[in-house]
Length: 100
Image (cartoon, rainbow, N blue to C red):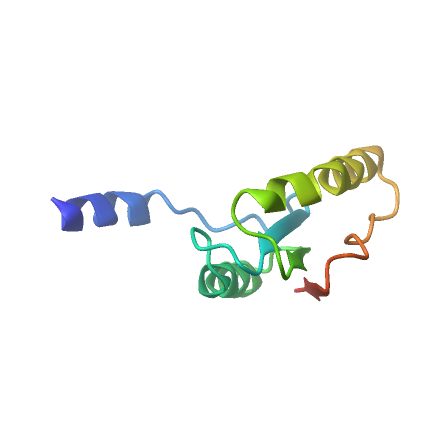
């Protein structure tokens, strides 16, 4: 059953549109659900498909606290993208920004 589920999930993965929307990923350095290895895998996948965006990593955030730490910044970033304004940088408290 697990192999069938994995096959179904993999078949649903669609490569991002290179000309599509910008992507911003907020990640927590202490997240045990979406681990740094998962984030690295996502970064490689997006880069391989020519997606545009960046990663904002909060080193001390876990799976719950990353939402609180990134919420306002995420809304500001989204507002800027929708309005066609310059991209809002990652919050200064986030120690690591990785554009791809």
